[in-house]
Amino acid sequence: MAGALLEMTDDNFTQLVSQGLVLVDFFAEWCGPCHMQTPILEQLAAEMKDQVRVFKLDIEAAQKTTTQFQVTSVPTLILFKDGKEWKRVVGLRDLATLKTLIQSASK
Image (cartoon, rainbow, N blue to C red; front, side, top):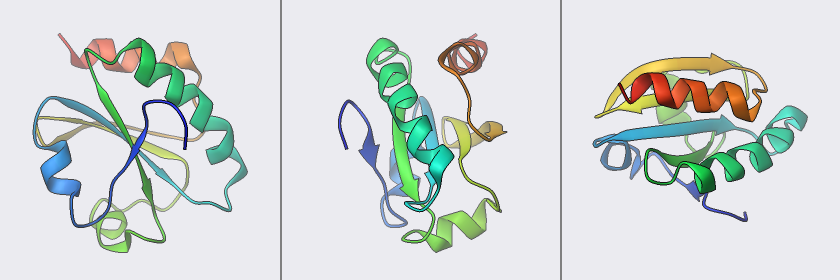
């Protein structure tokens, strides 16, 4: 995985989302739109690195967290603010939409 995206697991999820703005991409390797979302997220992570951290979470490897947040479709992007779910979007999203999402949470 290139760019500024990091992977998270069930084991480190709570710690990684506990502070600040964190965008989590719930994805699956077999998901075509998920592969299309990745370069957009890499660009977002690079351009907004001072405002948000961006992580990927494989739904098949992290079933506990996937179940906890009732993720049933991929890609699902959940924005966490200080450990709490702030906003969720399902499906492929463009860079402008994601930037607006981050900026609205930063207020």
